Image (cartoon, rainbow, N blue to C red; front, side):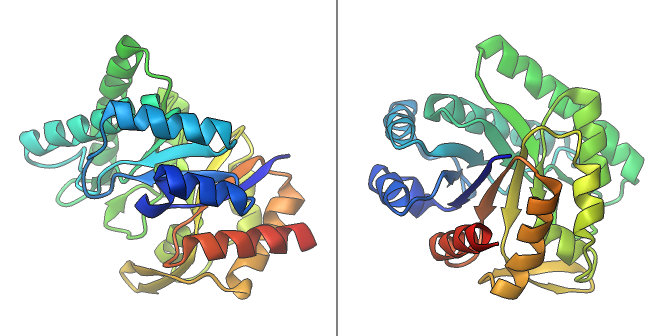
Length: 257
């Protein structure tokens, strides 16, 4: 059982940011390309070298502007390109998982959306293999019912394509109007050798996620207790407005359990 903690955000993934994260005793950082991939391969290699020296596990969050089930074919193609650009930088960073919100249902049924996402994932994986990039696609559980990506959909996708998944527990809470059965979730995740996860406080409405909030002890404890009892191998990326402070808080709480 290995449990790692770290922040998301562009500020933490600079060379100095990575050194600071390591000094604080955290173990992971998620590099955010959420508004576009603006890092060169050369810069990615430098940051990757620092992360390796400091024993920081890296992952990458691809841009927000992704919809692999768009009704406009050009938007699907543009989405694939954004994911592939993220994969290339991730390879040079030494980052394993490529996190992204895969699709919106819009006018399509769940089944139609799933088929389109699956087809796109398989196609992207072929390019990853061809380029010998050492990365894994990890579509994320999304925070709204209008978005593709509940836990069952992503586990099915993992089984049928060999991709990974990102379990955003805050999004799970938002999708289910504040209700989560951690025991049931970790039972479903048993076949996943290593869980790449997101966590934070969350504000939501009947439609789902509204915004990420600071993570309270009340948020953390049921989650951390479930990790301990399930003996999960997990990396927890915090996405709160203060992800470093909240990562440190969660690491301490886990240690004290």
